[in-house]
Length: 279
Image 1 (cartoon, rainbow, N blue to C red):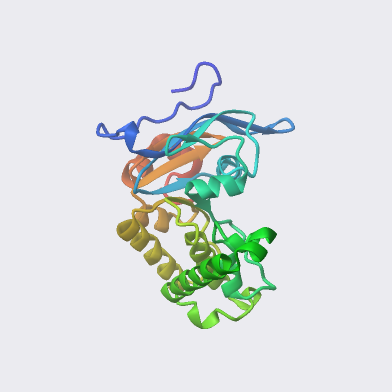
Image 2: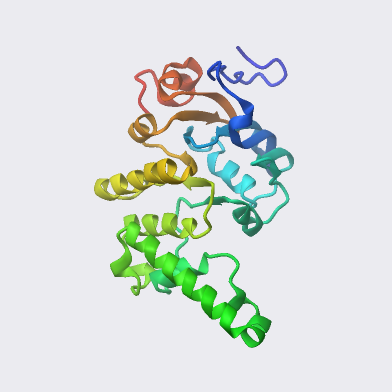
């Protein structure tokens, strides 16, 4: 069935009868963003359930990364709304959104290659008194105490992610998979409640991919962290996510469990192909 106003496929009604809007930690409605004459987001609507691992899939150019950029403050949306835990996101800069408890990684990792791994971690920590010149002079004990706390926390996370032995190495010497692990560890310095991952499996070997997936599940189970991740590996999507949201041409066309989405005709036509495999 097509939308009478746009001619685009209507969003498939795949959500369970038990869906509860109060469970959404992230809510996006009617989000629009254009670059020149190209509509990258064409009225995007979606919700991410608190405590879920939700996959965001769709063909290249569907608007997935643009959506991430818009709700994390890197792009300014033309219109629409986005709320994290009931708080409006649009118009806020990226650092303010991260401090609310919603953090992200990037498809191409953003590690500071010429700095040691430990410094990469410590830079991510918020509320550091030493960042202000006045505190260096007036409260020397305060900034030293906080820096010691941040260092200890960073080393604990590096140990968790099997990067402790690399703490003094330059980040640029890490493998692609290790940089992905470092980026996730660095995000955790912010103690986020929602983490957005942009193609976390891209370019890493299977062993490191399994480690990364293991950390994601441990963080969800142990700390209640919610995940929304963009991924093209359909084996990962179908095997690791609770929910799947499908985008095409800047809008959501379907959502539901992996099984529901894999059988939806709109999804098969737009992305999966007749065999049910990703194009």
